[in-house]
Length: 305
Length: 253
Image (cartoon, rainbow over all chains, first blue to last red; front, side, top):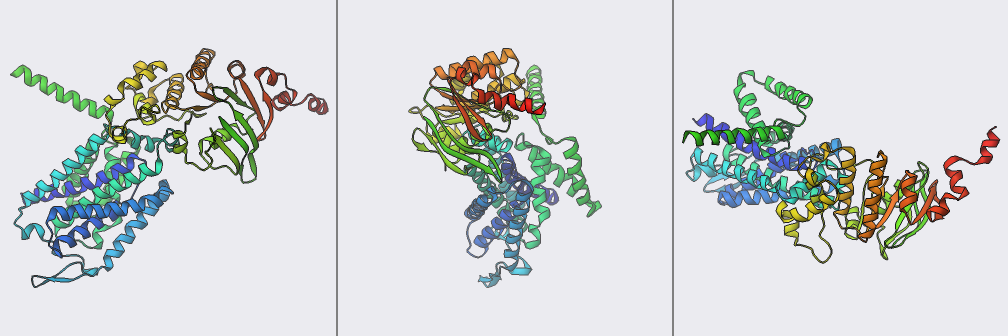
């Protein structure tokens, strides 16, 4: 049971990470900075609960806001570069963040124990949940409440004009600009929103694993983050969720016996998907089929009753 | 209304636009013609702010547009279409207009409704613009699924959705058959009747000569003639720019 709860936790955290990249991809920005924001969220919220003894919810919120603030700052220079250059620039950002936390040494005595980030040794004992009597099921519940909240929010965003504007920027910047869209504002807003979501994911991750160090925030994780929405498709948020379930649930967990070969499989999967299904797993046909299926079941239920 | 003074744009050593003076009056349909590479599209791009001018000024109703970002120029009432159609292909026809929509001056809604309003808030107004463009039954189709003529009409509608004072049409008749050109002519005249000023860049001479009030002819980035369609048709320099001079032909022999 614990094993499955653990996977459910991982899938929840990775879904948030994927959604943070999804928001940026809507505007056509492929960013590997999400792992940097994730790291900021982890450390900030971890420090708040461990060193300052905050409650988990405000700590998560502040971690997310600080990550969002850095995303806002990164948003402006990122405007000037596109495509591959943006990928390179955002990798650089994530590496800077990783190396900063690699060097952070802030040890404090709390209740007779020395706690806090310990540079190369990593940040241990982020034990808010255990110390406050949360069971693993509660943690899973918290993570998935937040996942659902973010998904509903992004779903709603797609139904209002702001969503159409984000997608318009992703399709054709020049046409969007010539239709009166303020590119700077839209792209920086998307970057900030993505940063906030990644920051929450980071906070949840740090507290559910109780330990993070600089290895956690590798470029591999950043690659995972962007590959979820790319594999899942940008039609709606369900694609990202399905891609995470498939990659984390099947490839990483289900094929555990394959060890590091799974990373090769992951790379192959991306290449195959890009060639045979560039629009992602979930496209317009998929959602309308799903809707038909649901309607059919409803009808059948009606007849049975 | 629109006043270009000594406008210039150099791309490295290439002088795409080289000292253009031009004035368009309110309510006019103004033609900008010239051979390929004479700087017509560059002029449109300069007015819209796609790139900054090398020298000169662009004024709209005495407001200097020259240093404003493209989306700010829309707020002052400039909008455009593109030579090679640039729609938001994966968005629906309706959403294409929704993105570009601006309320008429004096009837603005709050920014909250503007950004986070649902389609229902604008359903009626946008549907009206779609009917006008002959796309009433296409509202929920992806823009990329439209036929070529429909895509041209949608781009025109999108340019009108921002309620512009001045609308720049960059070769709107390119690739159209004669029936579609006739329809376009009516639409341009309707725009004029609605109070818009039109700058028409075009190669289809039938259209330009029958619809414009005045024309400027560009060659090598410089204006070589200005006048009514009739004056332009009879202008020797214009004929020379388009067809080469009779003297050259003789010299060639």
